[in-house]
Image 1 (spheres, rainbow, N blue to C red):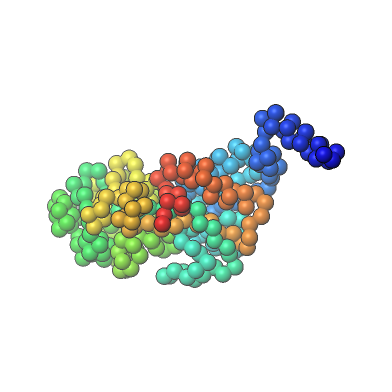
Image 2: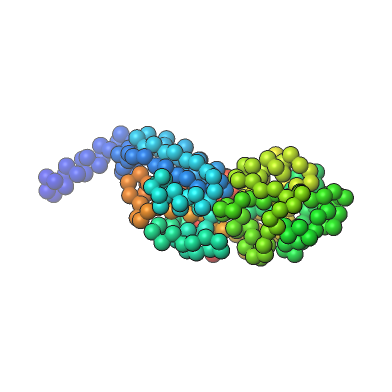
Length: 283
């Protein structure tokens, strides 16, 4: 055995004896500044990932904010953020939005979305046609869909929202939203949607599962309960993949952060606890 091999073995033995691992040494060496902007649907996930990643990599600064999905790729393209969070593959064109061909997309999660109402609302299920008519302003009273005699307050997300894009495509089968009305309002963020429905027993809205709490409840869609298990089984259709986008191939801390979110540890741990679904679960 050569002297070099002996030194290598002794070094590795010492590292293991001291309770370290190759990955922990690599993590300790990671440094830099990560700026994440974009989707509020993904915000609970990116915030939790940042918290865990910073604990493992104390030399890395991670800033996370959320406003809308479109802000993710826009911020990265302009250089205002190093990573953009978005509820669709921003490198491809979707209805209403151009493709950001200068960016690279990284699939990180399955985002299940739910139609939400106040817990006091007796309505438990709505069909595609009923939702289309509610969001078009054709059905205006809850009694028309099995609820109380009360006017429906329709809460929508503003243009630029990835949740809005996916809800329109999946729940409304591409049909258009109404744009104005006495009982119609638009909000900018997922948290604002929750507040609007949480405070009004006659409101209807939509968010991803991570935000379903407090006085709001998720209702079934075409007779199928809004659960992660039904998404995985292919029964519940209102969902999308969530992405992080970067300007070209990510490097340094950005690459390590994305890798951490895609790791089985995070996918099967915090990501699942937040009611997102690991990408490996989808066939």
